[in-house]
Amino acid sequence: MPIPLGVLAVAGAGGGVIAGGTYDLIETTVLAGTAASVTFSNLGIYANTYQHLQVRMLGRTDEAANSFTGVYSRLNSDSGANYTAHFLQGNGSTVTSGRDTENTWALTGLTARNSMTANAFSATIIDLLDPFETTKNKTFRAFTGTAASANRSTLLSGLWLSTASVTSWTILPAGNNYIAGSRFSLYGLRGS
Image (cartoon, rainbow, N blue to C red; front, side, top):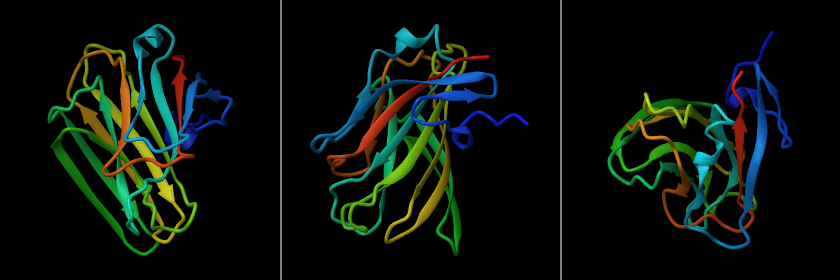
């Protein structure tokens, strides 16, 4: 039985074969200090090679709070109110859902803040579907989770209201900075 493309079909760090396509590791950034954002640039060079892009990250912010903060995505440095998102999350006892519309970023995950369980990083996988197509808006789908002082698993979907081909992808926390040791890996998925 084929495994569906996306967050449930993530292969190991070296790539893998998924539903007729292959994930290739393009680049990885591991922070040596704090950073307000991480940007993957010059993505247009992959337009003829990859059908979809994916970011796999382990993140934690330096914000002193015992809860999660958002993982935001921006494409092509667009900070206009051109993004929407939906989420469904659970913590083991309750399930909540919601949406964000007309934002200056797409909500594509949650990450641990610095007052949570020591050294606990949140894992997030974000798929960016058809980033180089110029006939449709860009779609995100993501899965994120943390086993820390406030456990949570979240499924998310989002939209960038633009048909432009993606040239850059910025990942930023809702507040403060990502801390040293946060890891961001960009993968490409070849079409079938």
